[in-house]
Image (cartoon, rainbow, N blue to C red; front, side):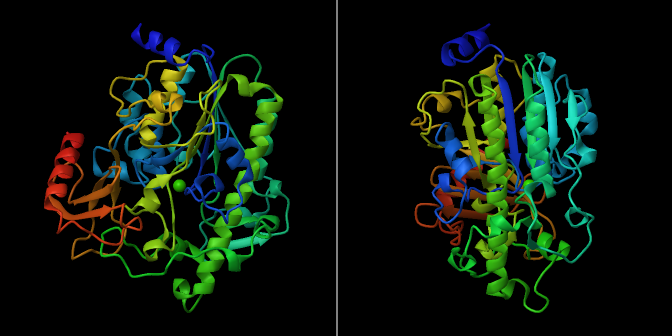
Length: 459
Ligand SMILES: [Ca+2]
């Protein structure tokens, strides 16, 4: 009963069963116009942000596709080592099967919603949550052979061919989403749409490359390797895609090409998102639909001498979150409050008057949707493992990290469930937003405080 009163008093304009359109974008770091990045061209997402709430400090649970999406959908923080890996769905199959509600789409389905999924929502075909969807739609597969992800080595990392949007999976998927929106009828829906770009390879129609003069795209400083277990030699890029045969990432021109490709893919996805949002408006669904735009984690575009994700740094953990609810107060006002991906589940539940399972770990941020000036939570927590070569002789470590409004603290452990601490990092974002100066040795009091907070969080 108290949940119901909360919904009526705090979200009075919302209908009893609002639709939900959940848009996930793979590997989208907050490198967008609406996040204050001026070289990038994202007019559609920028326009959407003007009508919703942009979260400037949204942190994912893990800096990889699988564990980030597992935590988002289940609302559960990692507990053991494999929860930080791309095997999170697979390893937890038995556990999720036993839960009364396996995910927030499942919660909507149990409440009578039609729940639809298309594109990349979980991680790979084997990771589907079996009880969550009324229907899993397939993007049309009319894209040419070059588009397949057959795992062949030496595919080019960057390519812009003179082809229409629909020749690419995300473009074809957008056509299917638009056609499907037109057929949904009166039953409330939860529609999850998962774009696969700007994930590698950076392939998009040529016209999106032509939006940019590569020479004018600002480049990250190609600095020193960080003295951190986070460092890895951009393994996903280097192992799976073709690169400069002699110099690789040491070649500044190649790095420039990569960043151009990433930008083109972001603009390509931006256009597809705009087409979907236009259709939502044309159909009059915007008055009755909560819209969430979510990036599954960030990406290093040269920062820390890395092209990739999988680190415990800000560049990999901070990602895009923009939400819009019908009748939202103060639309277009961003918030600086810290929020976490696992908070989305209870927030959507609250907005829709539904009750999530008691054991989920996130906290709803309905207050920030109503008032962007509130300070919000004090900490955002994330989890990771090391992916690089052995660090100081230790082959694999697991990270628990917290972001406060000022610091990032990272605690590397031998094991996630047991606490032997092997290495610590502390960065002060007031003076060091690039996280290059580890203060762990010189700030024992701060470390002690954060270690206590982390240990309480892990209990
Ligand atoms: Ca991803």
